[in-house]
Image (tube, rainbow, N blue to C red; front, side):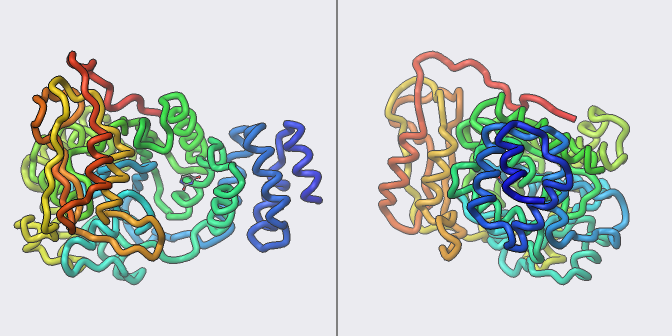
Length: 433
Ligand code: URA
Protein backbone atom coordinates (compact mmCIF):
# COMPACT_ATOMS: atom_id res chain seq x y z
CA UNK A 1 0.00 0.00 0.00
CA UNK A 2 1.29 3.49 -0.81
CA UNK A 3 0.31 6.65 1.03
CA UNK A 4 0.25 8.62 -2.22
CA UNK A 5 -2.51 6.35 -3.60
CA UNK A 6 -4.60 6.91 -0.46
CA UNK A 7 -4.21 10.67 -0.88
CA UNK A 8 -5.21 10.47 -4.55
CA UNK A 9 -8.27 8.33 -3.75
CA UNK A 10 -9.48 10.79 -1.15
CA UNK A 11 -8.68 13.75 -3.39
CA UNK A 12 -10.90 12.12 -6.03
CA UNK A 13 -13.74 11.67 -3.54
CA UNK A 14 -13.49 7.89 -3.08
CA UNK A 15 -14.36 6.10 0.14
CA UNK A 16 -11.20 4.77 1.78
CA UNK A 17 -11.11 1.20 3.08
CA UNK A 18 -10.49 0.23 6.69
CA UNK A 19 -7.08 -1.14 5.66
CA UNK A 20 -6.10 2.17 4.06
CA UNK A 21 -7.16 4.15 7.15
CA UNK A 22 -5.31 1.74 9.47
CA UNK A 23 -2.22 2.03 7.25
CA UNK A 24 -2.32 5.83 7.48
CA UNK A 25 -2.89 6.02 11.25
CA UNK A 26 -0.30 3.36 12.10
CA UNK A 27 2.28 4.85 9.77
CA UNK A 28 1.71 8.41 10.93
CA UNK A 29 1.86 7.46 14.62
CA UNK A 30 5.12 5.52 14.08
CA UNK A 31 6.62 8.29 11.98
CA UNK A 32 6.95 6.31 8.74
CA UNK A 33 4.44 8.59 7.02
CA UNK A 34 5.75 12.16 6.91
CA UNK A 35 3.83 15.31 7.89
CA UNK A 36 3.57 16.49 4.26
CA UNK A 37 1.65 13.39 3.20
CA UNK A 38 -0.53 13.43 6.30
CA UNK A 39 -1.24 17.13 5.64
CA UNK A 40 -2.27 16.41 2.07
CA UNK A 41 -4.67 13.69 3.21
CA UNK A 42 -6.14 15.92 5.93
CA UNK A 43 -6.80 18.63 3.35
CA UNK A 44 -8.44 16.12 1.01
CA UNK A 45 -10.64 14.99 3.93
CA UNK A 46 -11.39 18.61 4.75
CA UNK A 47 -12.76 19.19 1.23
CA UNK A 48 -14.30 15.81 0.45
CA UNK A 49 -15.43 14.73 3.92
CA UNK A 50 -15.66 11.15 5.13
CA UNK A 51 -18.50 8.67 5.10
CA UNK A 52 -19.80 7.55 8.47
CA UNK A 53 -18.00 4.21 7.96
CA UNK A 54 -14.68 5.92 7.25
CA UNK A 55 -15.13 8.17 10.30
CA UNK A 56 -15.76 5.17 12.57
CA UNK A 57 -12.70 3.34 11.15
CA UNK A 58 -10.57 6.45 11.64
CA UNK A 59 -11.76 6.74 15.24
CA UNK A 60 -11.12 3.06 15.98
CA UNK A 61 -7.62 3.30 14.47
CA UNK A 62 -6.86 6.32 16.69
CA UNK A 63 -8.17 4.46 19.77
CA UNK A 64 -5.95 1.49 18.88
CA UNK A 65 -2.90 3.73 18.49
CA UNK A 66 -2.41 3.91 22.28
CA UNK A 67 -3.45 2.79 25.71
CA UNK A 68 -7.07 2.01 26.53
CA UNK A 69 -8.32 2.33 30.07
CA UNK A 70 -9.76 -0.85 31.48
CA UNK A 71 -12.61 -0.07 33.87
CA UNK A 72 -13.69 -3.70 34.22
CA UNK A 73 -12.68 -3.76 37.92
CA UNK A 74 -15.45 -1.23 38.56
CA UNK A 75 -18.80 -2.90 39.02
CA UNK A 76 -21.92 -1.59 37.29
CA UNK A 77 -22.62 0.22 34.06
CA UNK A 78 -20.14 3.06 33.64
CA UNK A 79 -21.46 6.13 31.86
CA UNK A 80 -19.22 9.00 30.90
CA UNK A 81 -20.22 12.57 30.16
CA UNK A 82 -18.32 14.86 27.84
CA UNK A 83 -18.83 18.52 27.06
CA UNK A 84 -17.45 20.09 23.88
CA UNK A 85 -16.53 23.04 26.09
CA UNK A 86 -17.99 26.35 27.07
CA UNK A 87 -17.70 29.24 29.49
CA UNK A 88 -18.86 28.75 33.09
CA UNK A 89 -19.34 25.02 32.48
CA UNK A 90 -19.33 23.46 35.95
CA UNK A 91 -21.86 20.76 35.06
CA UNK A 92 -19.48 17.87 35.87
CA UNK A 93 -19.49 18.91 39.54
CA UNK A 94 -23.28 18.68 39.62
CA UNK A 95 -24.06 15.83 37.23
CA UNK A 96 -21.25 13.57 38.54
CA UNK A 97 -22.42 13.50 42.19
CA UNK A 98 -26.06 13.50 41.13
CA UNK A 99 -25.61 10.36 39.05
CA UNK A 100 -23.43 8.83 41.78
CA UNK A 101 -26.18 9.55 44.33
CA UNK A 102 -28.41 6.98 42.60
CA UNK A 103 -25.66 4.37 42.46
CA UNK A 104 -24.30 4.81 38.93
CA UNK A 105 -20.49 4.64 38.91
CA UNK A 106 -18.74 7.71 37.50
CA UNK A 107 -15.06 7.15 36.74
CA UNK A 108 -13.90 10.46 35.38
CA UNK A 109 -10.52 11.13 33.81
CA UNK A 110 -9.97 14.82 33.29
CA UNK A 111 -7.38 17.26 32.22
CA UNK A 112 -6.05 20.62 33.23
CA UNK A 113 -5.64 22.06 29.80
CA UNK A 114 -5.77 25.41 28.14
CA UNK A 115 -8.85 27.57 28.10
CA UNK A 116 -10.66 30.55 29.51
CA UNK A 117 -10.73 28.97 32.94
CA UNK A 118 -8.87 25.90 34.07
CA UNK A 119 -10.08 22.39 33.37
CA UNK A 120 -12.02 20.12 35.74
CA UNK A 121 -8.92 19.28 37.77
CA UNK A 122 -7.88 22.94 38.13
CA UNK A 123 -11.31 23.77 39.44
CA UNK A 124 -11.16 20.92 41.97
CA UNK A 125 -7.69 22.11 43.01
CA UNK A 126 -9.49 25.14 44.49
CA UNK A 127 -10.44 22.81 47.34
CA UNK A 128 -7.47 22.65 49.71
CA UNK A 129 -5.90 19.19 49.84
CA UNK A 130 -7.81 17.74 46.88
CA UNK A 131 -5.69 15.07 45.21
CA UNK A 132 -6.31 14.04 41.63
CA UNK A 133 -3.14 11.95 41.26
CA UNK A 134 -4.70 8.64 42.14
CA UNK A 135 -3.14 5.26 41.48
CA UNK A 136 -5.23 2.96 39.33
CA UNK A 137 -6.16 0.88 42.40
CA UNK A 138 -7.24 3.84 44.52
CA UNK A 139 -9.21 5.24 41.59
CA UNK A 140 -11.01 1.91 41.08
CA UNK A 141 -11.62 1.41 44.82
CA UNK A 142 -13.01 4.92 45.21
CA UNK A 143 -15.45 4.47 42.35
CA UNK A 144 -16.54 1.10 43.73
CA UNK A 145 -17.02 2.52 47.24
CA UNK A 146 -18.23 6.07 46.63
CA UNK A 147 -19.47 5.83 43.00
CA UNK A 148 -17.43 8.87 41.96
CA UNK A 149 -13.74 9.59 41.46
CA UNK A 150 -11.94 12.15 39.33
CA UNK A 151 -8.33 11.57 38.34
CA UNK A 152 -5.92 13.54 36.20
CA UNK A 153 -5.37 11.99 32.83
CA UNK A 154 -2.29 9.83 32.69
CA UNK A 155 -1.28 7.30 30.11
CA UNK A 156 -1.02 7.57 26.43
CA UNK A 157 -4.61 7.80 25.18
CA UNK A 158 -5.06 8.11 21.40
CA UNK A 159 -1.51 9.35 20.58
CA UNK A 160 -2.44 9.40 16.88
CA UNK A 161 -5.03 12.05 17.67
CA UNK A 162 -2.53 14.11 19.64
CA UNK A 163 -0.14 14.15 16.66
CA UNK A 164 -2.85 14.75 14.09
CA UNK A 165 -4.52 17.50 16.14
CA UNK A 166 -1.22 19.40 16.29
CA UNK A 167 -0.84 18.99 12.52
CA UNK A 168 -4.43 20.09 11.84
CA UNK A 169 -3.81 23.17 13.95
CA UNK A 170 -1.09 24.40 11.57
CA UNK A 171 -2.59 23.19 8.27
CA UNK A 172 -6.01 24.84 8.41
CA UNK A 173 -7.81 21.51 8.86
CA UNK A 174 -9.27 21.80 12.36
CA UNK A 175 -12.71 22.76 11.15
CA UNK A 176 -13.81 19.43 9.66
CA UNK A 177 -16.75 17.54 11.20
CA UNK A 178 -15.38 13.98 10.69
CA UNK A 179 -11.94 15.00 11.98
CA UNK A 180 -13.37 16.77 15.06
CA UNK A 181 -15.81 13.94 15.78
CA UNK A 182 -13.11 11.29 15.41
CA UNK A 183 -10.70 13.28 17.57
CA UNK A 184 -13.14 13.76 20.47
CA UNK A 185 -14.59 10.25 20.30
CA UNK A 186 -11.18 8.51 20.09
CA UNK A 187 -10.28 9.96 23.50
CA UNK A 188 -13.69 9.16 24.98
CA UNK A 189 -13.69 5.59 23.69
CA UNK A 190 -10.13 5.00 24.97
CA UNK A 191 -11.32 6.13 28.42
CA UNK A 192 -13.30 2.92 28.78
CA UNK A 193 -16.91 3.84 29.71
CA UNK A 194 -19.77 1.58 28.61
CA UNK A 195 -21.99 4.47 27.44
CA UNK A 196 -21.41 8.12 26.69
CA UNK A 197 -23.56 11.25 27.04
CA UNK A 198 -22.26 14.20 25.02
CA UNK A 199 -23.09 17.81 25.77
CA UNK A 200 -22.56 19.52 22.43
CA UNK A 201 -22.52 23.27 22.91
CA UNK A 202 -23.76 25.69 20.31
CA UNK A 203 -23.39 29.47 20.08
CA UNK A 204 -20.87 32.28 20.37
CA UNK A 205 -18.92 30.69 23.24
CA UNK A 206 -18.86 27.24 21.65
CA UNK A 207 -16.55 25.53 19.22
CA UNK A 208 -19.56 25.18 16.91
CA UNK A 209 -21.25 28.54 16.45
CA UNK A 210 -24.39 27.46 14.58
CA UNK A 211 -27.11 24.92 15.32
CA UNK A 212 -26.56 23.25 11.93
CA UNK A 213 -22.86 22.62 12.58
CA UNK A 214 -23.52 21.51 16.16
CA UNK A 215 -26.13 19.05 14.94
CA UNK A 216 -23.81 17.69 12.28
CA UNK A 217 -21.05 17.19 14.86
CA UNK A 218 -23.46 15.57 17.33
CA UNK A 219 -24.83 13.24 14.63
CA UNK A 220 -21.33 12.16 13.65
CA UNK A 221 -20.20 11.54 17.25
CA UNK A 222 -23.35 9.61 18.17
CA UNK A 223 -23.00 7.44 15.07
CA UNK A 224 -19.33 6.74 15.84
CA UNK A 225 -20.11 5.74 19.45
CA UNK A 226 -22.99 3.50 18.45
CA UNK A 227 -21.04 1.95 15.55
CA UNK A 228 -18.17 1.13 17.91
CA UNK A 229 -20.35 -0.55 20.52
CA UNK A 230 -20.98 2.21 23.08
CA UNK A 231 -24.47 3.59 23.38
CA UNK A 232 -24.13 7.33 22.84
CA UNK A 233 -26.55 10.23 23.25
CA UNK A 234 -25.91 13.89 22.48
CA UNK A 235 -27.69 16.88 23.98
CA UNK A 236 -27.27 20.14 22.09
CA UNK A 237 -27.28 23.01 24.58
CA UNK A 238 -26.94 26.76 24.28
CA UNK A 239 -23.60 28.49 24.78
CA UNK A 240 -24.41 31.98 23.57
CA UNK A 241 -24.00 33.22 27.13
CA UNK A 242 -22.04 31.62 29.99
CA UNK A 243 -23.66 28.83 32.00
CA UNK A 244 -24.88 30.03 35.37
CA UNK A 245 -23.54 33.22 36.91
CA UNK A 246 -20.01 32.32 37.96
CA UNK A 247 -16.88 32.03 35.81
CA UNK A 248 -13.54 31.09 37.35
CA UNK A 249 -12.20 28.13 39.27
CA UNK A 250 -13.22 28.45 42.94
CA UNK A 251 -16.18 30.53 41.77
CA UNK A 252 -17.53 27.68 39.70
CA UNK A 253 -17.09 25.16 42.51
CA UNK A 254 -19.09 27.52 44.76
CA UNK A 255 -21.92 27.78 42.27
CA UNK A 256 -22.01 24.02 41.67
CA UNK A 257 -22.28 23.47 45.44
CA UNK A 258 -25.22 25.88 45.56
CA UNK A 259 -27.03 23.82 42.91
CA UNK A 260 -26.15 20.57 44.72
CA UNK A 261 -27.78 22.12 47.77
CA UNK A 262 -31.01 22.71 45.87
CA UNK A 263 -30.56 26.30 44.65
CA UNK A 264 -32.55 26.91 41.45
CA UNK A 265 -30.09 28.43 39.03
CA UNK A 266 -32.26 27.68 36.00
CA UNK A 267 -29.83 26.83 33.19
CA UNK A 268 -27.42 24.94 35.44
CA UNK A 269 -30.07 22.90 37.21
CA UNK A 270 -31.83 22.16 33.91
CA UNK A 271 -28.73 20.99 32.06
CA UNK A 272 -27.34 18.98 34.99
CA UNK A 273 -30.67 17.15 35.29
CA UNK A 274 -30.98 16.67 31.54
CA UNK A 275 -27.57 15.02 31.25
CA UNK A 276 -27.95 13.02 34.48
CA UNK A 277 -31.36 11.74 33.34
CA UNK A 278 -29.90 10.39 30.08
CA UNK A 279 -26.94 8.88 31.93
CA UNK A 280 -29.10 7.03 34.44
CA UNK A 281 -31.45 5.73 31.74
CA UNK A 282 -28.43 4.41 29.81
CA UNK A 283 -27.27 2.75 33.04
CA UNK A 284 -30.75 1.19 33.29
CA UNK A 285 -31.49 2.67 36.72
CA UNK A 286 -34.69 4.27 35.43
CA UNK A 287 -37.00 3.11 32.64
CA UNK A 288 -37.63 6.51 31.07
CA UNK A 289 -36.10 9.94 30.81
CA UNK A 290 -39.16 11.55 32.46
CA UNK A 291 -39.01 9.17 35.38
CA UNK A 292 -35.25 9.72 35.80
CA UNK A 293 -35.60 13.51 35.69
CA UNK A 294 -38.25 13.56 38.44
CA UNK A 295 -36.32 11.17 40.69
CA UNK A 296 -33.02 12.99 40.23
CA UNK A 297 -34.60 16.34 41.04
CA UNK A 298 -35.41 14.95 44.48
CA UNK A 299 -31.73 14.28 45.14
CA UNK A 300 -30.83 17.90 44.41
CA UNK A 301 -33.45 18.99 46.92
CA UNK A 302 -32.94 16.43 49.70
CA UNK A 303 -29.16 16.84 50.07
CA UNK A 304 -28.21 13.44 48.63
CA UNK A 305 -26.40 14.91 45.63
CA UNK A 306 -24.41 17.28 47.87
CA UNK A 307 -23.62 14.36 50.17
CA UNK A 308 -22.22 12.40 47.21
CA UNK A 309 -20.03 15.41 46.29
CA UNK A 310 -18.82 15.82 49.87
CA UNK A 311 -17.99 12.13 50.20
CA UNK A 312 -16.04 12.20 46.92
CA UNK A 313 -14.06 15.30 47.95
CA UNK A 314 -13.25 13.78 51.35
CA UNK A 315 -12.15 10.48 49.76
CA UNK A 316 -9.68 12.41 47.60
CA UNK A 317 -8.19 14.33 50.52
CA UNK A 318 -10.09 17.60 50.05
CA UNK A 319 -10.80 19.75 53.09
CA UNK A 320 -14.57 19.45 53.51
CA UNK A 321 -14.71 22.57 55.74
CA UNK A 322 -14.09 24.50 52.51
CA UNK A 323 -17.17 23.10 50.85
CA UNK A 324 -19.40 23.21 53.92
CA UNK A 325 -18.54 26.88 54.17
CA UNK A 326 -17.71 28.10 50.66
CA UNK A 327 -16.48 31.48 51.91
CA UNK A 328 -13.34 29.51 52.82
CA UNK A 329 -12.60 28.74 49.15
CA UNK A 330 -9.96 30.95 47.48
CA UNK A 331 -11.10 34.47 46.62
CA UNK A 332 -9.50 37.52 45.03
CA UNK A 333 -8.61 40.74 46.87
CA UNK A 334 -10.28 43.19 44.48
CA UNK A 335 -13.88 43.31 43.26
CA UNK A 336 -14.48 45.61 40.32
CA UNK A 337 -18.01 46.48 39.26
CA UNK A 338 -19.04 46.60 35.60
CA UNK A 339 -22.00 48.91 35.03
CA UNK A 340 -24.70 48.97 32.35
CA UNK A 341 -24.06 51.67 29.80
CA UNK A 342 -27.68 51.82 28.65
CA UNK A 343 -31.20 51.46 30.01
CA UNK A 344 -33.16 48.57 28.52
CA UNK A 345 -32.77 44.80 28.40
CA UNK A 346 -29.68 42.64 28.19
CA UNK A 347 -29.76 41.27 24.65
CA UNK A 348 -26.41 39.49 24.74
CA UNK A 349 -23.72 38.38 27.21
CA UNK A 350 -21.15 37.16 24.69
CA UNK A 351 -19.74 33.99 26.21
CA UNK A 352 -16.51 34.13 24.27
CA UNK A 353 -15.67 37.68 25.41
CA UNK A 354 -16.51 36.83 29.02
CA UNK A 355 -14.22 33.81 28.73
CA UNK A 356 -11.36 35.93 27.41
CA UNK A 357 -11.91 38.44 30.23
CA UNK A 358 -11.69 35.60 32.78
CA UNK A 359 -8.47 34.41 31.20
CA UNK A 360 -6.96 37.91 31.37
CA UNK A 361 -7.77 37.93 35.10
CA UNK A 362 -5.71 34.75 35.47
CA UNK A 363 -8.48 32.14 35.67
CA UNK A 364 -7.14 30.20 32.67
CA UNK A 365 -3.95 29.43 30.82
CA UNK A 366 -2.87 30.84 27.47
CA UNK A 367 0.17 28.51 27.45
CA UNK A 368 0.87 25.23 29.23
CA UNK A 369 3.37 26.93 31.54
CA UNK A 370 0.92 29.57 32.87
CA UNK A 371 -0.14 29.37 36.52
CA UNK A 372 -3.83 29.43 37.33
CA UNK A 373 -5.13 31.83 39.96
CA UNK A 374 -7.95 29.97 41.67
CA UNK A 375 -9.69 32.90 43.35
CA UNK A 376 -10.11 35.23 40.35
CA UNK A 377 -13.12 35.21 38.08
CA UNK A 378 -16.32 36.95 37.10
CA UNK A 379 -19.76 36.99 38.68
CA UNK A 380 -22.54 37.91 36.30
CA UNK A 381 -25.31 39.90 37.93
CA UNK A 382 -27.46 40.19 34.81
CA UNK A 383 -28.10 37.74 32.03
CA UNK A 384 -29.92 37.60 28.70
CA UNK A 385 -33.40 39.17 28.92
CA UNK A 386 -32.86 40.92 32.28
CA UNK A 387 -34.05 44.51 32.63
CA UNK A 388 -31.38 47.07 33.51
CA UNK A 389 -31.10 50.77 34.17
CA UNK A 390 -28.00 52.66 33.08
CA UNK A 391 -25.46 52.41 35.92
CA UNK A 392 -26.76 49.10 37.31
CA UNK A 393 -24.03 46.60 38.12
CA UNK A 394 -24.16 43.87 35.45
CA UNK A 395 -21.04 41.94 36.49
CA UNK A 396 -18.27 41.90 39.09
CA UNK A 397 -14.64 41.09 38.30
CA UNK A 398 -12.73 39.30 41.07
CA UNK A 399 -9.19 40.39 40.42
CA UNK A 400 -5.69 40.24 41.86
CA UNK A 401 -5.13 43.87 40.80
CA UNK A 402 -7.29 46.92 41.42
CA UNK A 403 -7.63 47.91 37.73
CA UNK A 404 -7.93 44.92 35.36
CA UNK A 405 -8.60 47.32 32.47
CA UNK A 406 -8.36 44.69 29.70
CA UNK A 407 -10.89 42.42 31.38
CA UNK A 408 -13.19 45.30 32.17
CA UNK A 409 -13.25 46.34 28.51
CA UNK A 410 -13.99 42.79 27.38
CA UNK A 411 -16.88 42.39 29.83
CA UNK A 412 -18.31 45.77 28.83
CA UNK A 413 -18.14 44.70 25.19
CA UNK A 414 -19.78 41.35 26.02
CA UNK A 415 -22.92 43.06 27.30
CA UNK A 416 -25.28 44.37 24.65
CA UNK A 417 -28.64 46.00 25.23
CA UNK A 418 -31.97 46.42 23.44
CA UNK A 419 -34.88 48.71 24.13
CA UNK A 420 -37.48 45.92 23.97
CA UNK A 421 -37.38 42.61 25.77
CA UNK A 422 -35.56 40.07 23.57
CA UNK A 423 -37.37 36.85 22.58
CA UNK A 424 -36.98 33.86 24.85
CA UNK A 425 -34.21 31.58 23.54
CA UNK A 426 -34.20 27.80 23.52
CA UNK A 427 -31.68 26.39 25.98
CA UNK A 428 -31.76 22.68 25.16
CA UNK A 429 -32.03 22.53 21.39
CA UNK A 430 -32.16 18.86 20.66
CA UNK A 431 -31.39 15.37 21.92
CA UNK A 432 -29.84 12.97 19.40
CA UNK A 433 -29.55 9.23 19.74
N1 URA B 1 -11.51 19.04 20.55
C1 URA B 1 -10.84 17.90 20.23
O1 URA B 1 -10.48 17.12 21.12
N2 URA B 1 -10.57 17.66 18.94
C2 URA B 1 -10.94 18.48 17.95
O2 URA B 1 -10.66 18.19 16.80
C3 URA B 1 -11.62 19.65 18.28
C4 URA B 1 -11.91 19.91 19.60
